[in-house]
Image (cartoon, rainbow, N blue to C red):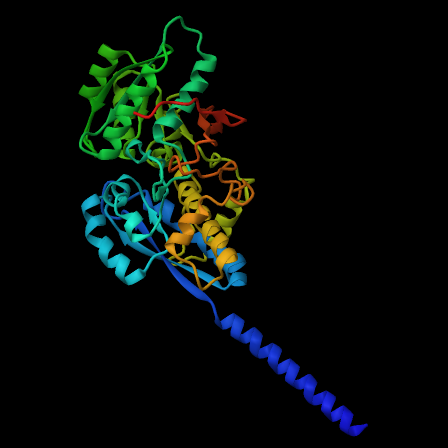
Length: 415
């Protein structure tokens, strides 16, 4: 009996040791993958990365803690200052490719797409942008992806909302303030003209070109208002441009509403101008849940992790630009999660991440409520079947959501 007990005890100890070693081995096998991040800390959008980057870090850190740790995967964000310049992106990319061996790239916007979209299929590294798509990217089988359609689509969604309430016996007159020589902006102007030409309910009355960081635009806005008489001005440019246009309108006694995007939204502009200067004069539109909605899980994750990231970002507010970074990050980690579950934590490659884009829809719940359910297709770099927007403005001294439900974006032709 004693011998049996000793034998049983030995077997039991060996079993415990085996379990311990197996578990320890499993915990030790955490595979770290680099994901380079394009930022701008010394160019025209230096203010933007101060909000998008902390959100990207917060969501990624949350995923590493809550999901990646269970899968044996850790994502390491490598931050690069690209100065919103395609030449800088092009010069740094070979080194990034060789050193980081990235499985995915977080692009900031147009310069990343312009510099890399033709070479990414060869390099086998998909790029996920935090911005909306651009017309020159609107091609099938791309390795550049955006969770949103083009900016032109988003503005068309806003104008669909305007038309639903329009009671004048004439088209809505649309103008834009832009900057020449920037591929993303030049492309958008083409898109504005094209979308307005497709319906007799919209009239594109012209583009006013200003510097990227203007001192004053009084002359330009006076001329635009007098000659073109627009009902709305679309502004895809920098917050500096938005602020100078609003100041010019105020000095000229004008109240032409300006329509903004995520990177120059009401929250961002409100850091420079008092809320009373925005009352009834600005709207922002995006294919994201409005940043005013604090009930979504994405907001709660950001609030919990923003002080845990390095460096901590306790003062960063939750606006459309931070939400933009969070949305980019959640899609990125969900892609990597798909791949890890499919092929294992040690076999994640850029090609596998590219394939994962087309493995079915991402539910709004998976995306932490940051977006509606979306599904990527090979015919476009954005989810063509999930084109919806929400809109906010300023009323009674407060920013408010004015679209309870998602506004469907009408189909528009490629320009």
